[in-house]
Each structure stands twice: as structure tokens, then as C-alpha cells.
Length: 245
Ligand code: DC
Image 1 (cartoon, rainbow, N blue to C red):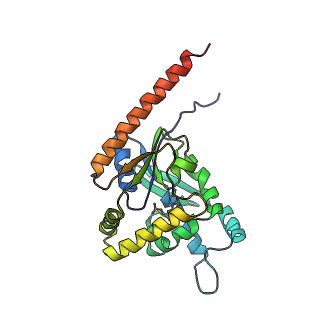
Image 2: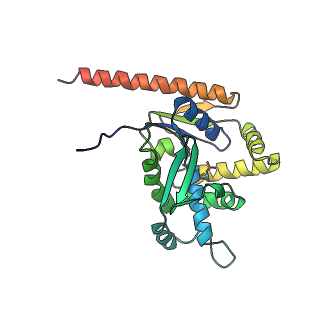
Image 3: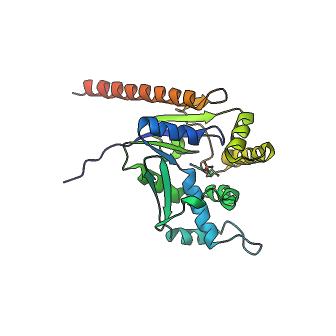
């Protein structure tokens, strides 16, 4: 007997650094009883694991060349699990690496790893498999609506004035405004200009500017869009059923 295959509903949240993606995804997950999936955590976990095997020093270039990376990735089994739907843990070869994801070194090297084609292809099926057991996933990243889940029921692209994003990042990490500004500018530049899966709005994404919105207001708007999209889908299903012979 074939097991019943349910469908996972995806809300894709893409957007710029500091636009509020992580917080919005967490609250949406709580309110809608879905999982909150930060896909950046996978790029961070892989960066941590590669750094362990390939510590950057003056003698060897970082990241390792493609051939070497391909060999390394064959030994890497990466999975994600959730506790209480919103506490996400990332495992590599069975080891929980979650506590290392926001270290200074990972922060420094993650964008060099996440821009590589071989890394993006490696993590694509990991992201799709991770959500499969769940009925609803709020997935946050840069290429979720464009590449990873192009059939998401709702795609949201979050944006905000750069000054506001800098202030939020500074408060979030207790960084100086100067450091937060450097960080945001660097991230924006790399995320938008990389050749593979650059940050861009999906053509069918709803754009939400959070500059003058509280988190709750942003979340309320997304929930309203989500319900509208469900209605539209139901309507479409009814229409296509009614014209069938
Ligand atoms: O969202 P974050 O700060 O945890 O992301 C970490 C890095 O991973 C950052 O360089 C952007 C990159 N990233 C990506 O390229 N694609 C994603 N879907 C998620 C994150």
C-alpha cells in the first residue's frame, strides 16, 4: 500500500538582511502552528563544518577548490529537526552543530561558502526534504520563492529602509551602528551580486516594506495574504473541477 502523501504548505519569506525575516518567520510559525525554517542556518552549519576541516591560513586558499569541496561534501550528511516547531537544530553526521552557527568565524566566511554553486546544489534537496513531514513551513532565506520552493502558496519579499535595517541589526547583536552598517552593506552587496541564486524578488511575491511597521503589523498582513491565497486556491480548484467532463 502506498502511504498517503500530504502536501506541505510553504510560506516563503525572502528579503534583505535586517528586514525582519527571522522574527517574522518565528511569530508566523507560532500563530499558524507551522515550523519556522531558517535556511541560512544550513549555510552556516556547512561553513562551520568546512572550517573545522579546512582552517583558513596563509598557505591554503579558502574556500577549498571545487574538486576538494565535492570530495568533502560526499562525507557530509546534514539534517534539520525542530523542537516545539520553532526551535531549529541542525545536525551534521549526527552532531548537533546549532550552537556554533553564529560564531564570529562562521559569520566571517559564510557568504564565501553560500555563493558556491556546488554548495547550493548540495543544500537544495536538504531544504526540500526537511519540510516534507510538516503540513506548514514558514521558510526564510534569499532564494526560497525563486529557487527552493517556486510553488509556495505565498511568497513574501521583506524590505526596509537601510537605516532601519542597520539599527535593527545593531540592537539585535548589540553592535555599534558603524559595525552594523558595514555588515548590512557587505551582506546586501554579496547577496545581490552573486552569480548563483542572487537575492531577487520572485515575480509573484508580495512585497512588504517593514520600515514603518511593527513586527505584529507585518505578521498580521502576511496572515491576511495567506488566507487570501488559500481562498484563491480553493476557488481555482472548484473552477477546474467544474469544467471537467
Ligand atoms: O540569513 P542568514 O544571515 O542566517 O544567512 C547566512 C548566509 O547564508 C548569508 O550569507 C546569506 C546566505 N543564505 C543564502 O545564500 N541563501 C539562503 N536561502 C539563506 C541564506
